[in-house]
Image (cartoon, rainbow, N blue to C red; front, side, top):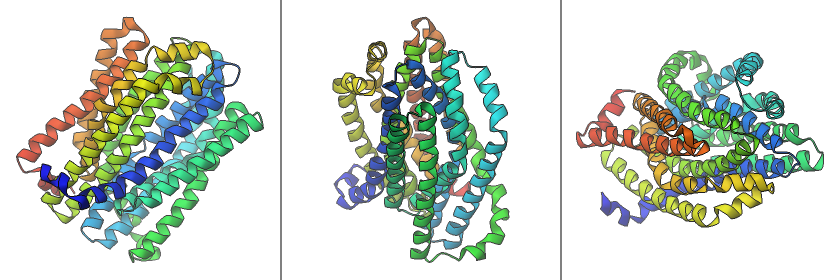
Length: 449
């Protein structure tokens, strides 16, 4: 398989999907950095803490439904590889229908859920006040945010990474511009940051639906009116497929939520510092996700075509470039982390607090790249069960490590997060290596669909 690295066409194929997604994904944590920078330059740390806690709750709410993108990518990629146009059309229509049904449920039930969650928070009254403001506005972007999951997944599965790239870039540019205007220009503070995100989400959905219509015509897929009547027939199958991915996402968000809420008990400066450092972690996540997305699309395509050799080539090429990017991020965090923190917040106490935990961040890229890549492999194969089991093991590891190190305060949280990332990669690697050596990965992946 190492001979595949000398194949220029492989590298071009990987980069055709990965590079647009890396470039566009980086705009997402950059948005978080701008949020932190704009709010971090206000006169109190609790504004930044409120955005951090409220933003975490929104991310938990939306990311728990991230199976909409994952399943759509895997299913549409497999349909594309198998040249099944009916399946490609059905995958999008079923996904978008499910997204809007779930969004309607969120809008109906969000207030009692929010009241319960915030009542359990140990953050200061000021932080909770602004977190509630942020959450109550951002939730109205749910229909657009969930639809964008499906749109991105379907376009990626169709081997089109440029459209999702522009979708994310335009959405986040709109968000950043409105962020600055609403917060610094109009003085709307936390409410301005939330309103900017909602408007940007709907702008992205409109653009995304236009991209889908173009892709639909290019591939000459069946007319929408011909497929509308069959949407209900596939929803049950789609829900069953996504059950395990949902449980996996639940475990993932549990760790990030615990990190934010337990950090809030350590003081306003600590929760503000963690908000800054989590922006670094998101930068790693979205950069690595660019290659994971490429892996999903390529693996799904190879499985749809039932081509083991192509699957092996894609694994080698994508892993190589993921390693290169991880090394680059490690160097950047090691030598320039302190400078980036200073740009985000000019509050001395927050800068000093964040500097204490930067070494943990420097280790994250090389440790976490494996779990992102392996997630991409299993999503492309639409194998939710293995992902669910792996995430459960990793989540248990997170809490065990935190409990063992709890006397070290915030260091315990960051040590547990690093162990969590490592265990996600190792557990999936064991499963994949076994199935690959036994020559059953491709066969069992097809058998599960």
